[in-house]
Length: 331
Length: 241
Image (tube, rainbow over the protein chains, first blue to last red):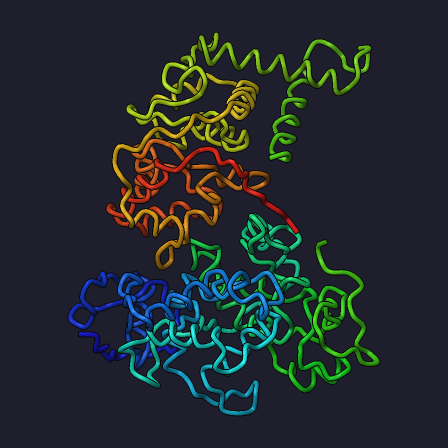
């Protein structure tokens, strides 16, 4: 019985901190547990479908299962398994926790049933594979693996396997990141700096450059030349704040206030990072074309610095105003 | 590791400011003077470890062993090789009755701040004992949690380092090595966090982890880390880029 059940709920996305399976509609062997946060979400949102991915132990021992495991390995150790496509020190699970399984952390089982979809970012209908390419181009600051390449096939197999039984096109509880209301106090760099120093710097380092352990990306850099580039979703304040609120500090997501999440998102995205690969030759033109929204910091002045010069590590063109940063941050 | 030592030494030098010999008046170099002060602190700590403190603290060796090697059968953790900042923090928690253990609270209550710092420096310099042979083969669930976590619980090694041997440096006060500690000791700590009997650490991380884990998961992950070697031929390379 893997048929999901539809619930009567009224809030679109919330803090689905746990995988929720209600009595009578769960798959066998999946614990039926519900947290206060998910109870609130369910009480407040319309027609959300509750779904839980199968446990990893159910990956089949056959050729398809091998491809699923390849995808899981890519998810955890992206640089080691796809070095030709990765341009920074992030992994897939830097943004999609628990190897893309965790509700409220843009889980892959929810993404799988959401494509193809029109995306205003690309101004076209993207397939799931094209969406994965975007992750490599922007969040991984690398090169998109070609359609049908082993890396994309493995990631598609892994995502499909996790989503087996989820209804295509349904809005699943825990999809994407939590959506936070606009903050009453706006967002503020100095307040964000305080939040960062108190709750983030221990792991991500006071200079935002994270940690490498045995040569592997460990705690991800959150700005600078080895982080996501200006074209990534995480460079938007609303998405970053939602991710942070739901998932950080790692292991105790939901513990910051909404205001703290907005402020620290502004502090993090108030630092320079690799240039947007869609760079049009000037910060102004790039801002107008791709970063005109209320949640963008690209092309804005933050803490007295104009953001958008990039950190000089991407292959984008340098136009008249496209000065590359003089040095990689934090080195 | 280097910054950890520097931190401990810095604290020791701070304590040394009250010492009888004015540094500027002596003929020895600053580094030699520092070495002498360190030696004096280690000797002070050694006295407490072996014989207890004049103020009434019991000897550490009674339970934790003369070499800080612990006693697996009695679930007394090893202290040898644990980072000084972590040991200082724990002794302060016992001293302030914030960490729940009647024996350690009574002992730490009789320790001064300078004695705490000296003891932490002493144990941090000892070599951890080789891991005791695990009597129970750790269940696969323990390895799964340790290496990959589960849901909102991150992989233990994310903070406690590869093999649970710690990440050292600035992270060592918050994220100690846990490899090779007695399984029953590790289990008791997770249960203590679950029951709000131990300070939850930075950002409440271990409090949240303890409450997310089931009793079965706690047992499995404790058995896993109890069976992990305390030392590795290849030291963990931690780089702040």
